[in-house]
Length: 239
Image (tube, rainbow, N blue to C red):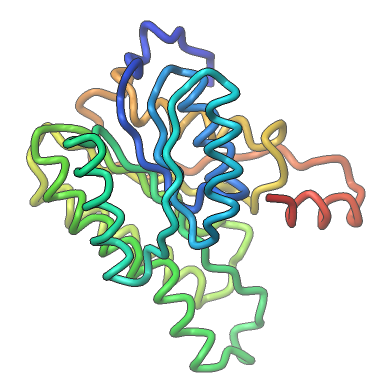
């Protein structure tokens, strides 16, 4: 995807909440919104990681507020949105990065892990969309980043399908000036350098470039990093 100018994106002084901002796709997306002039609310279950990313955002010249919040816990979700309302009185957009990870073969999946996946991705997406409907009624966007296609086990595909269904359903009931879309990366996050294509799509969906685009699920093919498995695993674990 081609680069857009900051003026064309229209993100200056916009207030954008990014969940799962402490690492991976969430961290890269938060930093990119900051580079394009948005005020970024970095939300993560780990307050230290949320704070670290907020500091990076401020070093880029943008305003950032870190909030500790687990989006699979309804009280955390409500509290997060209430804090944002108290601080800013408004919210222009939300990027919710789902966080389920499962490399368990389908036939070996335990009930406990299945429920963990549902909580991490489906419940969190449901709660974010519910609150988004309340706080974005004046216009804005919600972009959900779904589990990667790389994880092709049936249970992960089922999670993707459920979140995609939430996007479709929310699009039907959200006001027409609220854009709800999803992004499906081809693989897990590696680094900001190699994840740039997905980040560009996530930023474009929150900008004026995507005005009128609703209910879309976009697959993003990401380049594979150099074939060095040990380095690949290390990069994936970095915040």
